[in-house]
Length: 341
Ligand code: AMP
Ligand code: MG
Image 1 (tube, helix red, strand yellow):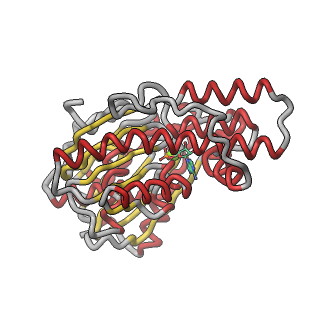
Image 2 (cartoon, protein in one colour):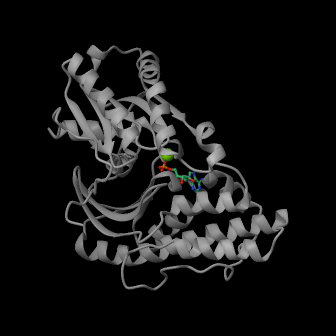
């Protein structure tokens, strides 16, 4: 069984071929950093046009690298949303065309389900149900993954995502785009000043997140201390990264209690999404899992930020369960994983 996965919901055009053993036959990712750098963030119209220019070339590259033909495929999967609608339309129409021409099953996948299931490709010990911290550029939520297509949301952000706050703080500090990885590098050279910034939702009686107040606190600090020395920039990075991690840990502590009560057979805490590439966060969540008798796991770093592998794998898991789509599927800018949330 071989599935082609296509991802174009934000600023990565990506394609991959995976098989049912979780072997990655090819994976190509083209990040639109250069297109968006001078704006300091993703511009939807530019993103859509860039996806359109690249997508067929990338699919050809992925097929060639795997040494496969369309006739070798079992299904075509695509991120059908949520995301920037122009980009999602490019991916969905391309996937539909390939599926139609080659008489293949068409599998629209929720982009978040891609982030939710990839961990199972690399770590076969991860069984349902598991607790998932999904933290990316556009999303920040805690879910219980009960099975393929079965999710229960325990909490989410009431304003920004963690990834967006990494990017915005990096922009304020002028340390380059994309913000997350650059900020992590600078944080390694800085001191963690625990009282410098607030931990927004600490102690709140739910599993929700907030990052806008933290972002504003960083902005006030920067404005008050102009011009910042290189050392101060590093300290801001370390202290901000600490506050984000502390917020996530605090919210997860509550979620773990709920998870253990409602799903006593659950064994794993998973983190995924672009921010899950952050080593500081990973090591703290690893520790938190151990303290709570859970096993920590996360996708390999290169499959945390958007990629085609996660879509191909989620598509394969859906296909195996008979959960394919139809050609009247409409690209969805908004698409909740938990239909009841
Ligand atoms: P995604 O939306 O899944 O493509 O992930 C992109 C987001 O992940 C952006 O907001 C990045 O800033 C963030 N990100 C990527 N790498 C890191 C990192 N090492 N530390 C923190 N955030 C990161
Ligand atoms: Mg992205």
